[in-house]
Image: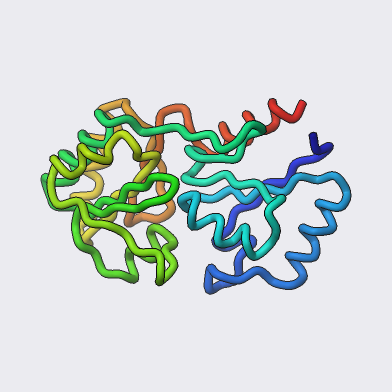
Length: 207
């Protein structure tokens, strides 16, 4: 067990302004910490497979907290908290009222329910150009993957009233935790789950 733990976000923190590179100075600082019995963790809203791209820029000893805490590296392997099929289907029904784009994530895959411009998808999900994501065309297709979803994000099409209406309905369901990384989105994660709960679990396992 490590004597100390350090947790760091990616976008606007560890990564450069292009969201893809780590400075030589930062990389050296992390390696120095690791040499002094410090366990370093990336803590991000990105899905697990995308966070691994940044981990590969550093070294395999870097731990991952991803999907806003729904997926993280525990002492016995990767730990995953799911949104639940009922919650995912409700979110679909709510967003379909105004055809709001919704992106849904598993640790390895990403799905979208309404076609959105690539630059918006890239910003919302931190997608690499080569990663890609799959369309969900209807409720039946969604039901096939709903039980695998860890988190998601609802995106505005420009009408903020539509987004606020969806947010109110999602909040009223009391089935998930809501946050936002910007005024034009709603981030959805399982109840009682966030980066903080993942950090607490990791801290507990290291005591």
